[in-house]
Length: 436
Ligand code: GLY
Ligand code: MN
Ligand code: MN
Image 1 (cartoon, rainbow, N blue to C red):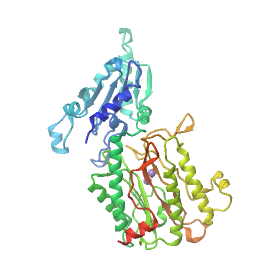
Image 2: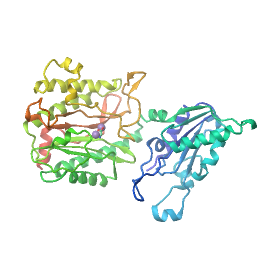
Image 3: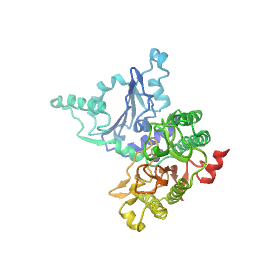
Image 4: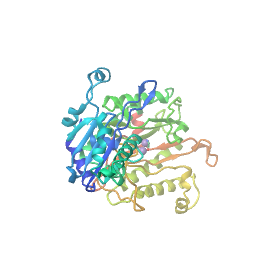
């Protein structure tokens, strides 16, 4: 699927920020070998894709400032019947013009030779400096080439600006089109989470649960996961980014699954924690319900005008109060929060922006102040409690319990809309669902 209107809108939005006599360049991420001659499945760089719409390697996207004509130019791979016989369809130059609505398309092999012609027209170059070493090198080589011609009156750009930061900021507010894709990613993952909740049982292994999750995402055209799924049973759940997914599921343990499919390059990121045998033990239930109370309050706090750290503040208050009530922390709640006593059990933030990247682009503080939420921002809300299996400072019954509950939300005018809505999370609903 390709939405040309959307890509054109993004290009105009970037162009409106360009200085006169300037150009912006973005480059496709190169293919990466996994082993031998086998490449990792190709995934375009998010900023390059955001503007170009192209999901192929070996390409450079150029946007000229309005005073220079405002063209949008793509250098990409021409179609090649021999390569296409082996590796499949290539968009080619004609495809770039018709499908991506760029104004001009040229073979990528000509880019280096044509670059000085562009550079001598401009004073300022916007590029993802430092992120695409090949592009940096091409620009520097072209600059050197121009400098050698100074006595012939040739000029070159004298100002470099980071385009990465500008595109990152554009990506913070999602369009309806993006939200629609993200909803599909989230809802496909919801189906997969619901399916694995019924599939998991003692005796299976974490990798089998992972395979089942991948399968259900694949059925919804989410062929790739947004990140390697975390399928963590028992105390493995206390390893925040556990990805071994190798252990057998033990009767009496919890299973934490943090996994989300990617759809059309848009991610989801969802966590559920449930008992392998379908019934929470009393200590598991107490920890679970505390995390759930924090998450519900965190989601309720998401609305326009609220500062980014407010969601964490609300959740920390509930978690710390609950930890004191359960005897896991001792002392005055406000003092414990001030002293960050919760770090023993809760060592991450409230969530993150979500979009083309799981930990999506955009600044969290602006001029030193936490950013205020705005309609169209998409983020996760994901409190957790992780009690180390070897933590002798707490009663034995708590050790090795790890719980995280994570949903994806979009900020609306009044509050927020849960993209991962429909995925059960109360103790009663989980136990009933697993008993079916
Ligand atoms: N799955 C990574 C995270 O929750 O941030
Ligand atoms: Mn996650
Ligand atoms: Mn997350």
